[in-house]
Image (cartoon, rainbow, N blue to C red; front, side):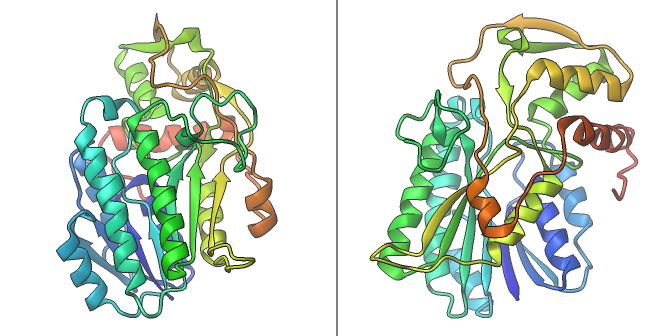
Length: 331
């Protein structure tokens, strides 16, 4: 198969690309290498893919309609798409809202338009987010829960992506799976995420801002578990039936919520240093707790998260220390 993978230099995208190449697929990678966080990390991820048999890279922005149309015309043999490119970050959407409109709305639409003109395409898998659930009080979050009260612009754009994809499934029969990711972490991760920024602060001896005294809970999901779920879904495109379009939405998470205090304690243990804590009220865009119901993706693919937070952090810490020291490890 030939897979178009957007966001290939991103955290999850880089891991998914490696897994696809490992099993012999051809990967057409797309990324704009923007500077939302340190571009050196994105380039280092990309360097781990460049030169591998079956990998081709295109430096372009998914919101660039002309560029995406040209890519689709140049790569008519694409059989699957894993669309992970997006402007990430809940709080940053309060600072740079138009970046989310461009990447998450226009970008998603552009990918949909390219997809419907690919003659060999079997399935489009795209990244949604657990943030669409808002401050849902029913745990764990299930795909059947209402998702019409987002707490951030980021969440609103991700829900809009789901609705656009449903429309394209109805109008054009485009088979799609939207994956609602829950707090993915691990080696080669994103510096803007809590576990990574906390680790950096601990090593510098700088204070960590801890909201709601560390009681907020997140469904931390290790990246290797996530990759298995993504590939399992990609291999199983949905079919239309009973008047419904060939689209589905699935959670992909660890099915276990851990407090931020627990995360900090595990980082302290793994890094061998104590954190300096300063407490603050919970930001208005942050939810109190996330936890994924994963029965649906498990029934479809056999997905079963196997990595507890303690194990995942013990794997992240050596990579982080080596990366921070400038070693650029091949882990």
